[in-house]
Image (cartoon, rainbow, N blue to C red; front, top):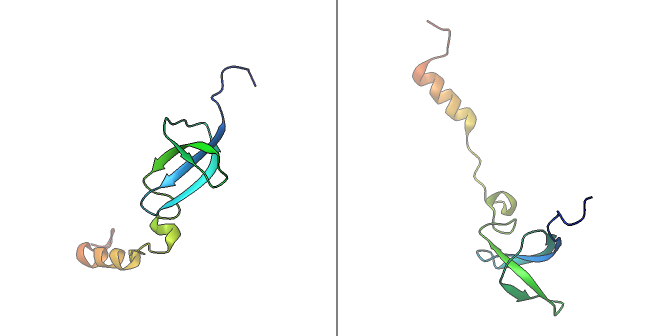
Length: 84
C-alpha cells in the first residue's frame, strides 16, 4: 500500500438512538462528537438511523408480502398474456 494516501482506520462507536444500542468497531469514518465507552476510553461516535437492533428484518417484525396472491389477482383482473 502506498503511504499517506489512505484514510485513518481506527475504533469508532456507532450508536442507534432508536433502539438505544451502540457497538464499537473499526472504521475510516470520523466524527467531532465523542462518547466514553464501557472500557473507560473515549471514542468518536456516529449516530445512525437504523441498525441490526432496530431493522425489521433482523428484529423479526418484517411483513411478508403475499406475492402469489398479488400475481393471481393481477391475472384475474387483466388475464394472462397470450390468451385472447
